[in-house]
Length: 135
Figure (cartoon, rainbow, N blue to C red):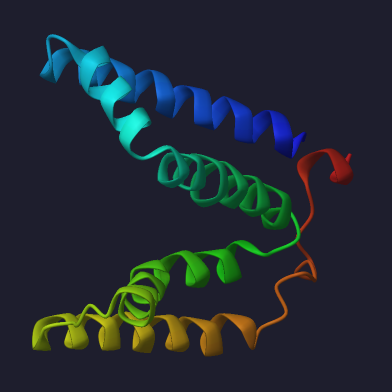
């Protein structure tokens, strides 16, 4: 599979859906969009180029080298990474309930990692054959 084409297709679908949502919610979306582009060009370039396009491209490239179990642990930890980065970069703090939630996600991901990664899932089970191999 071509990861660049997959990434481009995903981004175009999200762009089209966001555009349709904007048209539905705002009768004159172009004035707001143009004003945002003029007022925040560097922020928009960073958010669209680095935080969205580059991050999605790296994800699709790397995902083919990672098992499904490991990818699920990485994706499950995404809210925790976001909370850590927002604390470090923006000085935001979590409420007590947020800390409990982050802790539960971390415990669940760690438990999943220790239980799933301890098994060797790459080896096929003995005695299991496909129907066409039996003929």
